[in-house]
Image (cartoon, rainbow, N blue to C red; front, side):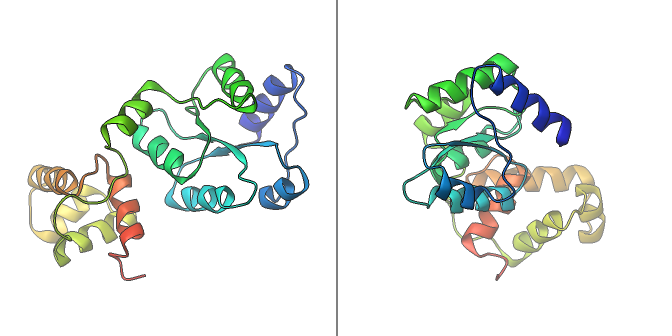
Length: 193
């Protein structure tokens, strides 16, 4: 979002940081090793891009910006190689502190992300068996944008029952949210891709 990017650029420039907005972050990192990349995370594709950036050598300094309501995405970002995690909704001063600390060799993250990393939860591999074909079909439909209401109607369950079954399924595979379940399905190849 241009307004968001402009505000971030202005807040970091005010600290004396040279702020650039390259069209290709990977090419920029090759030209400017040691720079910090701020990367908004909203989807599995964003996480894939972050993972690809973190495979570059020397490893770049990446500050991931997931939504504040999904700490598990912050965990996945750290595991993918991000140096720090700051919620997109964070205050200007929190973002400024995180970028400065990252440049100083420190890692910064919300306490909830740290807790999930320490306890081993958030973005982990499934704890139980591979899901059934029906459960994989549920995830595929949800990843295609279906609502739980539509999924329930299509499968013959009440909406309330569908929510309960999905919650139990997510718990069984070791995730907390729909997004985590869909990302795990992609990671594990459950969709056959």
